[in-house]
Amino acid sequence: MIDIICDYLSDVESQRVRPDVLPGYLSATLPSEAPELPQPFADVVADVKGKIIPGVVHWQHPSFFAYFGANVSAPAMLADMWSSAINMIGFSWAAAPVSTELEMVMMDWLARLCGLPARFLFASGGPGGGVIQGTSSEAVLVALLAARAAAMKDRPVADRLKLVAYSSDQAHSGFKKACMIAGVDLVRLLPTSAADEYALQPGALSAAMAADLGAGLIPFYVCGTIGTTSSCAVDPVGDMALVAHRFKAWMHVDAAYAGSASMCPEQRHFFTGLEHVDSYSFNPHKWMLTNFDCCACWFADAGPLKEALSLTPVYLRGLGNALDYKDWQIPLGRKFRSLKLYFVLRQYGAESLREYLRHHMALAQWFGERVREDARFQLVAPVRFGLVCFRLTGATNKVNASLLDAINKDGSMFLIATELSSQHTIRLAIGSTSTQLRHVRQAWLAIQKHATAVLSETAAVL
Image (cartoon, rainbow, N blue to C red; front, top):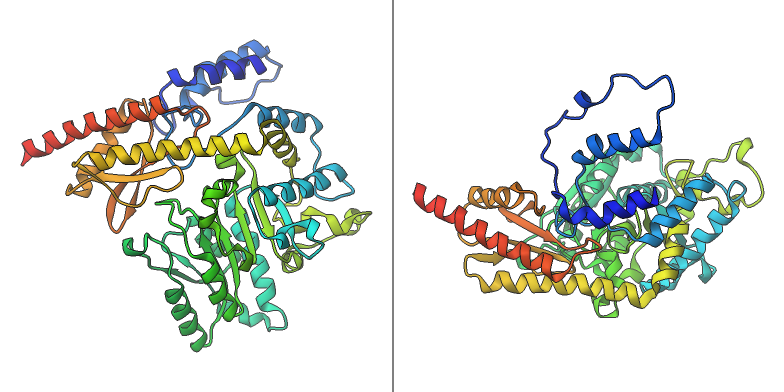
């Protein structure tokens, strides 16, 4: 199997990034029922290669520029294999002592590496600490539940209907979904603008919270973002936290993609103000060579989180219950995820990880310069971290959508679009493990070629 995986990764660049299939294609190729008798491993592998792989979007392709990356590494994959062999379900210290304690140590290692405030570390001796969630969506949800527990303390149950959550119109949809799951109906997605580089302004947040408080409602949760999905906008989270706390609300920061960049000292200015926030999360599985799933999440005070999620029936009571990570997450069971962080941090070392991130950011800057040099294009937002947002200058949204369709049609690369200030905007996100300058250069030359064709077709119609 290791040979098969190595062959796949060594050959992935020769594949279409996105498969040429339609929804429902697979069911016609597979039997309608599971087999009664065991089948040879070779037959299973042959069917995976012939039927399953043709439907794969190759996220590890060096020309995968869509969404944000999900990069992998040999150390993380090997750790995942070892963890799978152990198959320890780490819901409590008693069920998985080393899983629990290695996670605590890794979260402190990672916090120090990223320059996080000391109050997020277990080693500080305070009420804070870190936990590995599956995704940022889970982190945003558990932070919301902690915020609700804190806000509802000594309040009547009926006051839950008055709770109000706040974020920007650039926040990831995971924020709105968290509110839906928790039954929070009063949600404010505050508008942002290009003039502020799509960052939420503290004054707008303060005005919205004051208006809700004046209407008899209860502001309780604010979610800021460092590195929004659409444009890598950076909210002024420190100032937002001061506003939130003035209204006795919880402040969470979602840095799902961008958080890895805080390992680089020259990027730390984007992360100022974290000493004021109540919780913070980012995904090593996006940009830190750590396989999915791995979301690092810290709390300055885990008390409200445990109050919201702690439940210990008789059959789970035992030595070390105070350390149980089941009280820090939605599900009971949990994987031994900390092992892959341990492998990645030890086998790469901090400086190699920093150089990897700087390499991607330099590639993004190179692509941004090419966009600036071509008068047919414009940058729609500042080039930040590994993301470039661009479009055809003066062209309609329909024409820009046609350009994106042309870019993706032959499968040599994969990009997606977003909307900024009602403008159809193309995103190029650099984050695959093996992406080099030649791949970014090839992408730019192909984009220029497709732009010439699309603009010629548009001119001919006119």
